[in-house]
Image: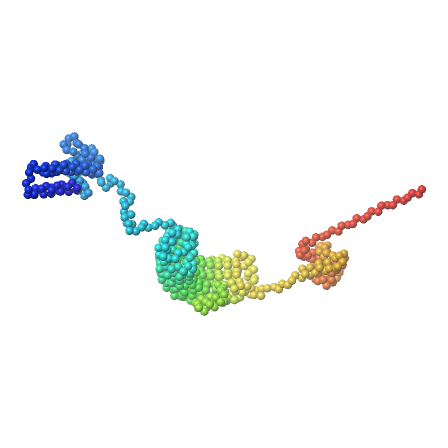
Length: 612
């Protein structure tokens, strides 16, 4: 292209020279100079054009070879070195970038110019896209630096302990008062985190936007198996935002939504999502203002769930017959639920028939909580005054009879909690009697919790039978009325202690005696039995007194009489063996002393003097 541009320039110059009106003499010096200049320039252009042609031939891998029979040079490619093509080539027409090459089409044959040279991995396009913006940073999987960068970029207040908690299996953010912006940073940091398995956000009052960030996190994270949103007050909008995460997440196993103000409307979203989820095992929905309005949703949840094993519905208002009928119908089709908590739901006589059906028909529930957990009087009065919906269960002794019938037919339930219900002593006795081997031979019960319920003494017989034949069963009672025995001081211990004192009381040392030595010296011979026992009565008593006197013990007569009464044997004799064994138990260090016999002095016989 440059050669053509130069030739056009030369032609224009020639035309300008011809157009000049002046007559130039052939002998003019300027004319001769122009001719030489033009000839020299033309020669240089020809040489330059030939060099460019050779360079292009090398670029497209074309070389020249003379054919012996042909009179002209033929251009061939390396692949066809032995074949000379005389046909017309159209490669220059196909490839626009070769149209300006100064080689005829009939002489050109290409291999494939697109595969001659390898394409580089990065031709420079990637840096070109980030000319106005820096490359995105690459963060580690723990998300620590990612969290702090997001916080700094948005001007948020940081959480210093995050750098340590993100490297453990539990992220505890209770009572932090988290808002939506910081929740977004936390969720972004946890997306790729492989350490945190439990996320605790208790009492943070999360907004709908915060729930949306949490929803995105649960859809992308593959590590979190335990999520606690207790007291977060997410409401119906928050429950709706979490719908996708609850229904599609396959990693989460435990979900705590207690005290979240979900209500009946929000429960519809949660129940529908739980029905679709096939991996969640434990769900806590306590204290969420649920009542009979959510009956159909609860029924569908229990009927459709194939993975739920623990369900907590305590601290709601599920006491109407409608909700219990739905509960009964749902549990008929459920095969996975193992634990059901219905404490603090104001349950009473209205739901007892359905409770009987549940106990007698259920084949999978192992733990049932119908208690009314004890709280202080001040707390109860506060709840009753400001939160009228908080009412404990109120089963009576009449209800206990129906519950006991269902309990005796059940062979899967392992724990039944009925503590703090107004069952009274008769209700407690009825329930305990229902789990005796005679009435429930196939019972699997291990714990019957009747906390703060007192029973009468007639329950003792059933307790002894259960303890003997089913020692693994634990029964918790508030206590047993009138089950006591008055126990006073040990009279025998007092008498023996007094005897030791009186025996060592005399001031003169030679008159003091050891009462323990006297007791040990007694024989173990039992008194005789038979028709002559009364005849020997006084004789045995006198004999014991004589033994005391012979041992020279200075004991008062009243003390001796009390000792004989305390260790009385058959037919009002003194049991010397009992006296000895009891004394040795109280004073085990007592041993029998042996008296050393004094050697008699030998008197030498006197020799008589002989008379002279």
